[in-house]
Image (cartoon, rainbow, N blue to C red):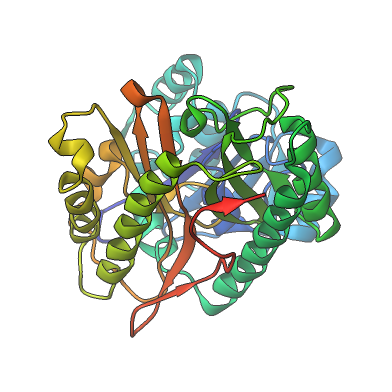
Length: 368
């Protein structure tokens, strides 16, 4: 904050969707609301103790129990006015404010903050906290290792449940039941089967699995605040040679990405090492239209910096890989004109000497 000449940080969250960015509030305060869908506001002056503003008086005992912040109160008006009033009490009448959370604001909320804080110079300031969040502590990595174990166990249950005749939602329910028994707090699981399997990782359908179906399973769970993800491609009852061939290419791309994921390299080095594998494939030479996605950072939010998707790698391309970074590397190759896709994803923690995979399930094409 001193380097950026910021007099205060305003950290706001009202997560309405998955994935959200509520992790900023939790990282700073250890308060995440009661259901990860609770609006909250932190006013963090450069020279004073911070203040946490929550949405409901009923949450006050929980917030006081969870957070180290001493000044916790319930809002009496809109969050924008609460921020203005707090700054006034802190004696910050003008100057520069860093705001974290513009991405989660509706247009009305954005306008209200702009109006209430009109006398200040306002800048986006996620990077102030990202610089800390991008490298995980040993305790954070231990928590993510436990979350990854939950993903592995849930995926094994998926393979047992995904048989011919079973419905998609039944297989996902088995995954979520296994994870809930381990203490998982939230699920972001996605599955797809049949034509365009690689595109259908979303709400499970009532579709019944058929022998020979290509299936993609994304086991995604949050445990004690931290997310983990495992992604695998396989088939129901018997293998699919075409899907196996495509997954082999995806697997090669992931291996190259893991090799490049080492201290001192850049995010762009990792991205380019994987895309070279795809560019040299027959699908590129035959001019098949394809969509390629590589991955993202992970932690208190499902998707964190650094970004490794086409639209996020450009702003993050120069970020240096450091020990302690945790990245979900999930190369995804989707071929719309062939109606097929394959994905493989693992949670990777960067070490001094390379990469440790936190997810342990066998990779490669699986057959239920």
